Image 1 (cartoon, rainbow, N blue to C red):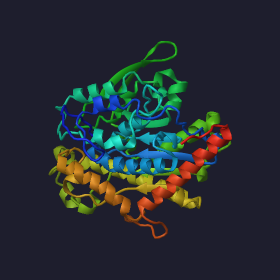
Image 2 (image 1 turned 60 degrees about the horizontal axis):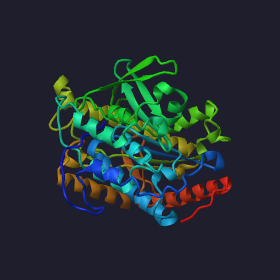
Image 3 (image 1 turned 180 degrees about the horizontal axis):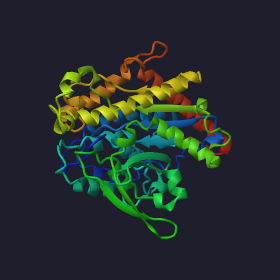
Image 4 (image 1 turned 45 degrees about the vertical axis):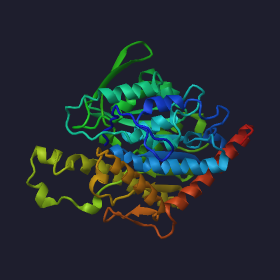
Length: 417
């Protein structure tokens, strides 16, 4: 789960390598940066596979997947031109907490109907998260920044299928927002800003978020939401089952793919790192904790860390086993670092030094071997049958580019580069 906060700071500096400290003005100034003529990939009914991108929650550690996404988009641009964006290639983009913010940034439309952010701009936004502790923080500045960035954009207006989980603390059940649901149920067509604020409302860090929508008959529907990480900190399977649901409900965009035809899925799942290697606690230590010890202990949040990490790992295991069973394990790529230490493992330490370290963690992760979860130990181990994460991502970009071109050709769309 991910506390998210953007401080009111300003800074000079330019270039893609610097952290820009005025994200609202910068984002709004980029509205015309991508050509309106760049076509997005037609739906899977024009192609042969379903492409899925999933982004975990993790506070400032979202810089790690942000760095990887910037690399991915750069490689796609080398193939298909400087104006293409992540949303032009993935059929479904899912994100939890910070990952939900990234999902919105990649898919919210600008004035020309193109993505509001390029992937290289994600870290400029996430790099502004301020360290904070305790529920005393009211979240007002975060709310104002997100609302200014996303304006009146609603979930149903996203440029691609999106899936963002939240948890309704009043009903004690997950509430999942998706573009498909929003277009079929007006009460789920919430403001994208409300959904982002909700999925980022991490317990003990940020307050829950209340808002209302109206159904088709004008009856109000109330939402009382907290962090999506309570439900699914790793939303990979959530994204896949959302496609299955759409197929079951008759969405022709996925015809003739069957609801459980996961062998035709290509999934990129990005984690935000963990500190498993530190082995901070053990049974003897936790047996002495009371409520406060579980909530906050020597700079860590054991209770939150335990169930968010358990949830993320279980999803990874399920997805990995599923693709292995279907003999298409190379269609599933999970990029995660379980060896974070010190401040890099924190969700809210946003000193310039730590932010730069997180960028370097992301870059170093690209050079590491592809790993898979060992079901017995829960730790990631190198996959001897695959190369580095960088090599696998480059392979992914070629498959994504070929799939997009094939779909556009089948639809009769001319590609100009």
